Figure (cartoon, rainbow, N blue to C red):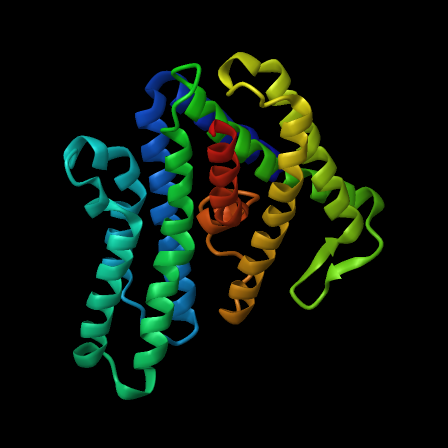
Length: 281
């Protein structure tokens, strides 16, 4: 627990320093690095399943998907749609389909195609919405960055709240066959803490956020975001069980690997983006 707490503070220090000193550019590259490293660990788990995904090409494509929302308007001002995530996903299907014919045996071609493509969709494509949030316009030059911080804080504090609430009040198992330590009491505590964190940020940083993003609205948006953070964590547990591994990696003391760090953001990133886009009108 001590290592987890220290790592959490250290990670938040890195995030805040990156945003403060490097701005949007730093946030985009930090998020993209986390996405690519998460995909790397995902493919490592697929290897443990006895399969052979196209990990190097998948990670290269993942990096492009993550960085495209930031760089496409500058590099392709007349045809930004060429850098749309759907274009990269279509390219990945074509390349993976061609490669399985000559580089994989008949017994694992379908699985190789499925897991290689699922990795690109589930990790970098979903996390690319964090980059889209970071570059959102608003009443302040850092509106997008602070919306990104809001989403990360609400998602991750759900983990912390669920852990502490589960230790204090946990009685009823939520999904014993997937994640034995998770309880319904912990989940409720995590959602409530996320709502409180979301409301507090909207109150104290109101000048950075779009008009109408009141503490009450922020708390209301935080509830489904927190619920999806829990679901996202359970999905990672399903993948880890399939790979017969406890942690996705050992990069971060007390937490695990990058996948263990970013798992709760995978499902919350697109939902947060949709909520903020609707808020912008």
